[in-house]
Image (tube, rainbow over all chains, first blue to last red; front, side, top):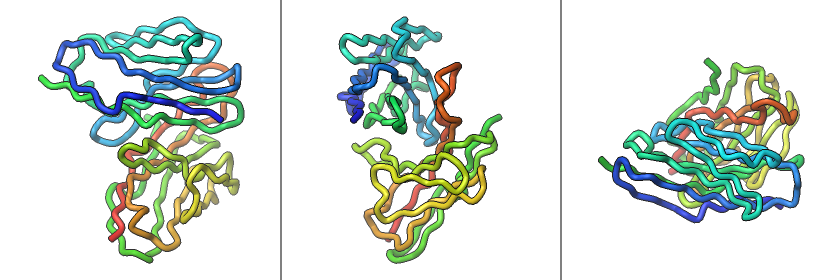
Length: 113
Length: 117
């Protein structure tokens, strides 16, 4: 069985603060893929990143960065210098084996001006 | 621009009514999915389809059925709507994993918010 835990239900920050969203996963497979999705108030989930289990390099895309650590089964997401437009629900997800994608329960990020 | 289109953004139905939620994708994807999203519970998989006329139960299939007669269309059916099916329903599609490139990415529709009174 696979599982994704996003322990932070809601995070509130003030604009320009850095914020890290945690994601911890469980799987018995050695090959797996991790994802982050953003769901703005409009409702449509937007793909942010995909990472496979053999690539532990951290990734940076503008103000977004991801820290993948197999030793702790974590795939954390950091937003640097947060902006109001970053306010959304963020989902971490896991795909392994022949399973479908398993989502965490999401973290709601509120960025106030 | 790739697109997953859900037929209705908001629906209000009465208990016992039969409800159809339609989803169409224009990316020629093989796999399609229906999720429901509830506060505090995240996204839960209802049904999915690997290809035309194929369907598989997800984690919470009870009270739902699906239909996939054409590759681009995946319908979710509530045979007899109940109040506990009030929720946001999300459709998604993708191509199967091949282990290369950026595959496996799910493309989502905007969601259908169903209220059952």
